Figure 1: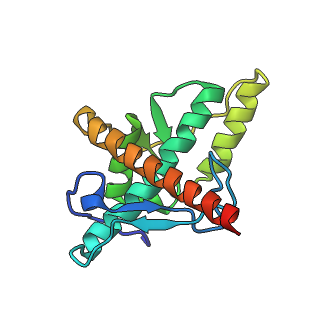
Figure 2: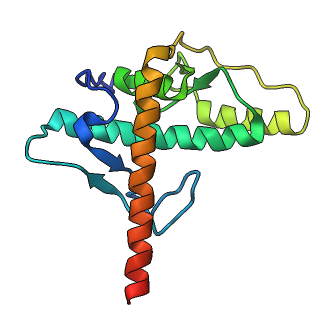
Length: 178
C-alpha cells in the first residue's frame, strides 16, 4: 500500500535531549512565517542512535503542527478532533504523537485517495460565509489522545521554543556583527 507504519521506540517526547527545528524548505512557512529561519538539530551526541534521531524528527514536525493548530484555533475556535491526510497518517507513531501533543483525537479519510485537504479548505470557506458544510468523507476511527502524555509534550514544546528563540537571537547577533 505504499506507506508502512513507522514503529519508533517508545521514547517520551524530547528524544533523549535532541531538538529538531524542521525549517528546511525556505524557512518556517507555517504559523510564524519566517523565511530566514533555518532548520537545526540540537543536542545530538555520538551516544544517540538513529531511533533517537528519528524520534526527534517526528517530534519537531508534530510540535510545529501543534503551533499551526494554535493559530487556526485563534481564528476559528477549538475542535475536539483533527482530520489528517497524507503519508503521515500511515505512521502510527505520527498520529499517536499528534493526538497526544494536541490533546485531540486524530482521524483520517478511510479512502486514502480522498482529497481531504481540499475538502477541509472548502468546508472552512463554506462556514466562513454561513453556508452548510459539505458532506464529510468517511473517516477512520482514528487515535485518541492519552491525557497522561500531555505534560511531556508541553515540556517538549517549551524546549522546542527555547531552541527556536536561541536560533533567532543568534541570527540577530550575527546580522548585527556584520
